[in-house]
Image 1: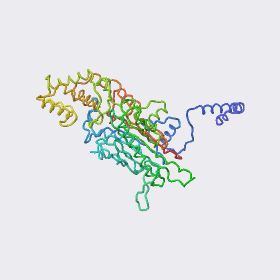
Image 2: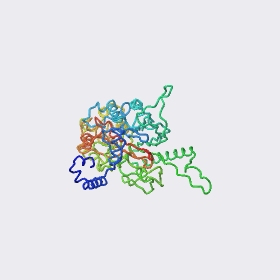
Image 3: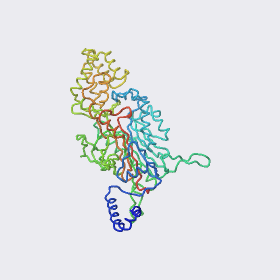
Image 4: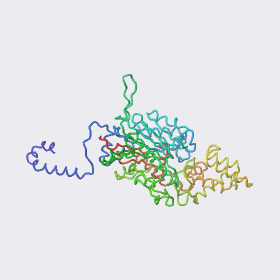
Length: 547
């Protein structure tokens, strides 16, 4: 006001003494009634950091998919979590079955998928920490060499066919310890005293490269790929065991520092009690293989699970016979909380063709299952349209005969799996052929043929049955994959609210691409997205930091 009014002499002499106070009152009223929080920002912030700061202060803590991550500060770090869908360079030959007919064959091959993964993970410089699920031990080093080339080190889980791996930028973190648990990979990382995720180490007088000093700030990471299927008790046990490992390790470190479990011995009678041990910063992230409220979310957000607790999705399953607790922190789910702050719906992390209603009476979870049999079995009652498609495929393969002899079985398996001797369909068919031969029979009946595919559905492999009937045999199930896609939030980034502060999360897809996937027109995986999961990314600040 004072910069404008003096430019008008008549107003300055006649109105300013009266109007200026009222204008100031109006301006102050607008400021105090605004939902935004104003703060003086340093003028030397990089644009990406400035956008993130402003987003946080105006409760718009979601970066668009095209916005680069904020430049790292001494007390902040970024983290991505991504179920990459098993690489099919050596293992994972069946991955081509996940794709819809419109996706070219070359886009289903590992060379194309690897390029897309590299682009998605490292876009904008890449997060300081990257937790992936479904890596293959047989080809891990070559599959993810691009991460090493970009300045990351890693720990790969030492068990299971489908493994989790945690990467960290060497310029930002160093590894203190790691624990390989059931379906979880626990790591403890120490932040280096560096102001940029891309800052190189300094050089000493002899020309040797020096790494930044340790900052003393540490974070435990629990990288999860929990059990699939109707096993809420297993998923709960897997997460509880990981958190117990952190508790034990934290107590061990405190004891080594002279603090003991409770902060050390007191000073004798009358001495004040020792301070409580410092809570560690903890992130629990990955593919939880369960949607909505669960025993895992109850444990993380409420701190305990009692014997009477039941998951809404599995009310008949006992989770625990006694009270189980975790006292590390109260955890918050980053994505739902950030999107709730912007009053916009939280996007799903898993999008797939909507197949279950067309395949199974009453529907079922269409996303689970893998060639390893990762999902527990579910009850299957085939729909009439599925039975019709199976009968049509059987008549086509047998050329109208009542049985499939061995040459016909081989023809079928070669058509769907592109090679004899592999796949759960092969194992199921061979077992049935042996049983038929033992009873003096010569081939598989329609019921045997149908049972092979019902077994696939029991393991959650809807995608495989749909591919075989639609793309390989030309006998699509009526209505399968039509309409909106199946969507859910299987993946999470939970953070301990006392140890960490959430600054922002990043949209997993642009709104147009997300809308196209959700419509069912281009579900995942597709030519641009090499997995049926979407990557989640969050930026944190260590609690109690001064910046």
